[in-house]
Amino acid sequence: MPDKKKTSRAPLVIAGTTIKAGTREVVDLPLSMMSDHTPATLSIQAIHGKQDGPTVFVSAAIHGDEILGVEIVRRLIRAPALRRISGTVLLVPIVNMFGFISHSRYLPDRRDLNRSFPGSPTGSLAARLAHLFMEEVVERSEYGIDLHTAAINRVNLPQIRIDMRDKRAHKLADAFSPPVIVDSALREGSLRHAAGDKGVPVMVFEAGEGLRFDETAIRVGVKGVLNVLRHLGMTGRHHSVPPLEKPLPPSSIATKSAWIRATEGGIARIHCKVGQFVKSGSLIGVISDPFGIRDTEMFAQRDGLVIGRSNLPIVNQGDALVHIAAIPKAAAEGADLDTIEEAFDGDPLFDEDEIL
Image 1 (tube, rainbow, N blue to C red):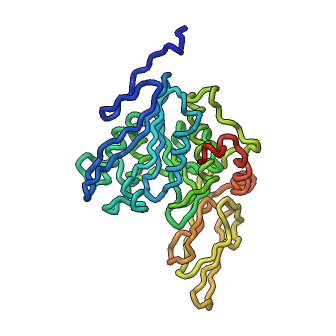
Image 2 (tube, helix red, strand yellow):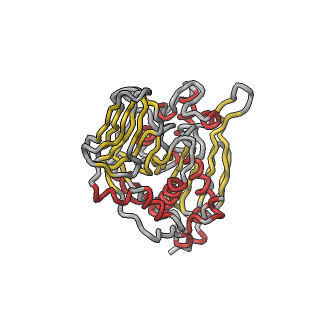
Image 3 (cartoon, one colour):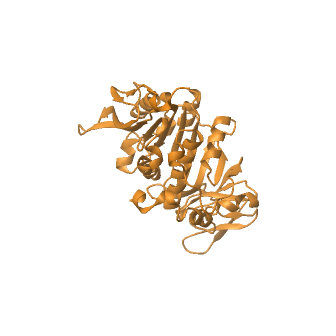
């Protein structure tokens, strides 16, 4: 049997930069020149292990205002578990650098990057960025984890979204161990769809809200990614992921979910929070006119778990207000935010040095 310590792994070459086995490097991939002559690049931290193993990418800020994933990647870069790995991890903290700088979901041309994949080398700015990401990141990888938050003025319960028909993605979602796993159809133009066409299963982590940090959601994300890498055999016993002192129940599975939408415009007062179980027919909010003359009550249309909600009281008819996943009450108990926060409180993975 060969001595693993003497195993020599070929270097990784990205855009002319050579990353030797057992090292890490930040690689800046040229994308375009901005209007003020500032170069725009797609920046990747490549961690290339000494031993063979899978290649996994972790990306954030495909929507530029969804910044929670940027902090998750920052903490992953500092995590002891990634100091010595098998395989390769490609960490991309900011995919949409244009939206990130301007605090916007979109690119300067108002295109949604997550509707622009697989892109084109000669298309719009969004198409070119999507093409570069596919060519330099996705096509080098065997698995992907894409970090998102709710859109601005909304908040999401920490959850993983996958196509349940993809057995490989389902196994990774189980390993991640989020409070909820949601069966989510693939959308044309999305990273998940384009990567799937290349045979690369990608799962989406959704948690928190746009332009905000949420410590509990960040911890769920960091722990989940490390759980996946451990499941794939990329992190060894020398840096195991410590278990929670108060383990959470297994992830709840949601095969159906739906938004309750405003039946009219006005001022909304929503009476439920993410992570709360609601019963069919229960009052979840009231929409009033500004004069207080008319109140319209809104009721849950099914039993289920609130996995997303709007934080904006000003609503128009048709606005999405409360996202309810069809999950039985017993299966939803571990998704309560207070329970999740308590489980992660005191976790040795998140000591002060790593947070700071």
